[in-house]
Length: 319
Image (cartoon, rainbow, N blue to C red; front, side):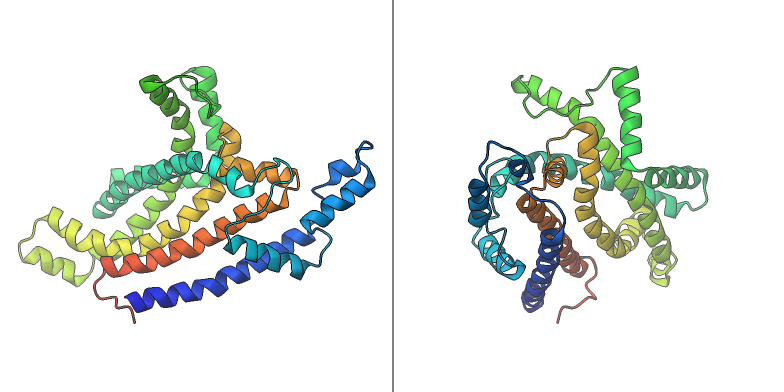
């Protein structure tokens, strides 16, 4: 397994280089100038604007800029934000804890909803519970998060006045009061993302369990006297989770991109809102770093999914 892991790591290096090359070229050729505001400011002399462009290498050829950027990224220098006037790594680290808290909790909520409902729906196919769960699952992943988020704001913030609809990172309270206020403001964005992910995962779990539960070895386990619960948990669910792992591994990076909209709706100061503000202000170093991180997450979680396969199914061998 160690040789397989090392081989996959070596494969990811050219994959990430190719992704970074495409992203950098597209962003470098995109319209817009990060110093456009300075160009329209009569108080800034033209030579100052020219010096700034020379300092950041904006007039250099794209291949030269790309090599410089990759070299700096390898050394841990993610660039300098033209808008915020700080290092990109500092900006991302300021927003990362909030994003990880919201998205991690939302993904956990989605799995806690999808696994029991999906398994029980497959064990009792076409029952009333299965039909109700299937209907709500279709509704859940058919509604986009911005629609669900607005409905939550109208219901729980405007009409009922139970929850705040603006996420604040600078809560003045301390102790348990701070924990309570943080939980109140995080309920809606976590629920919106978690239910959307859970609805989609429920359908995959149900389908995977239905495929496995009809196999001969499951009937053999029952004929040997195993209880229905033990048969489902030990012999059905574990094997049914193999295709689900792929879906979840691909969903996790998708949660980051999907959270861009949710963070805008609830004003969550996370990576998504940082990406939107950077795009609007033509802050290319920030946009490049965040999009590359999203792409790297896709590659990383695909690798994690491949490794989890071997734990779920001993028949899988890594060569």
